[in-house]
Amino acid sequence: MKPLTVVGPSISQAFFEQTVLALTKSELVEEVLVVSQGPVDLKIPKSRILIGGSLASHGTLSQILSEINTKYIFFLPKAQQISIEPKALERFLEIAESTKAGLVYSEFYDENERGKTLHPLNDYQPGSVRDDFDFGAMILSSVPAIRKALKKYGDIPAVKFAGLYDLRLKISIDYPIYHLKEPLYAVTRANEPSRREKLFAYLDPQNQAIQKEMETVFTDYLKKIEAYLPSNLKGVDETHEFFPVEASVVIPVRDRRETIAEAVRSALSQETDFPFNVIVVDNHSTDGTTLILSDLSGQFSNLKHVVPKRTDLGIGGCWNEALQHEACGRYAVQLDSDDLYSSTRSLQKMVDMLHQERYAMVIGSYTLVDFRLKEIPPGLIDHANGPIRMVTIMHYASTGSVPRGLSTQASCVKSGFSM
View 1 (tube, rainbow, N blue to C red):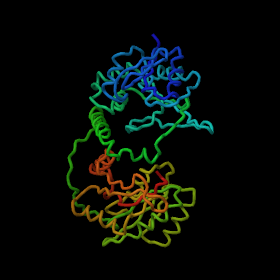
View 2: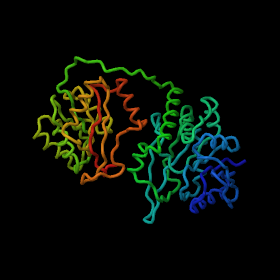
View 3: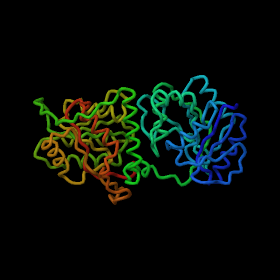
View 4: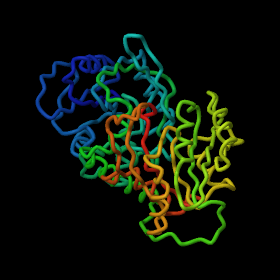
């Protein structure tokens, strides 16, 4: 018995059929299962059609697991043109065997008419729980690890979209997920959605069912690793702690010389009946942003220009710098370095809401615009569908992980270039 079963979606595209054909020529591949919603005239050796729904559905994954006998599954999540490096399958298997990993993924190349560009991926860590974590176009999974994870933590739930996500989370509890830092294949991308479209896909009402499934699967995972905190919402207790101002607009920034001055001036132009300041955490910019901020802080006494001592901080670390700063107010208000407030009363409205209802956090809406402030798709982002990402942020704020003051997001317009 050979060690690999390759599983991929329907091969309606000719280029993907070539990818599958190349895989069948490997002596390591026992069989290729092609998931299709209907019959396909398949003329590839060692291949057969599996009639089913999405590759990520409970029904399809359960059928695959019931029919294969190999030690590993090689998942091709999307129908893409993939050029496999020599001995790539051998390398995947070598790593899987030596590390006892439940899942192995590798770096790859993006390929186009101009040549190949390395596409590095992030390491998988205990906090890498996003449903859209990038594993690339080829993922090797251990069948024994899958079977043991499902036996211990329960079968894949009756989902249409979140089956692979559920499987990955359950495997990760007891088995390493190994990032092979070698490019073992190349992907030729065609008709890919833009980065901005991907970023805001979770807000599309058509994706609401997908988001609900992902949230259900993730909640179940938190319970299984004993990290779930049941909802116990309550109003924020009034504190008598002294704060230098009522609110601080916090702007983390690195290398945004084109937009930082406008963002700062927008924050400073707010009209309020309470004192406020603007804290800009400059994460060691190298493009002239620091000089711009130094000049502005000399003009405005309520602008605090903070350069952290540490050089290894991400955006979260910069936020912590502002929240722990002696100048931070009772309320911390998020404004990105490429954002503008939609009016001079935005800050007043948010703080008024926090006062009135004892909220831990207020989330505003924003409109995506270009450099000329002309609205661009998807336009208004109002979070009306209650996406999981916003639920998560509100949860953290309400459980007290914000160390000083409270947090609020801004009503603003957002420059499209950064998306």
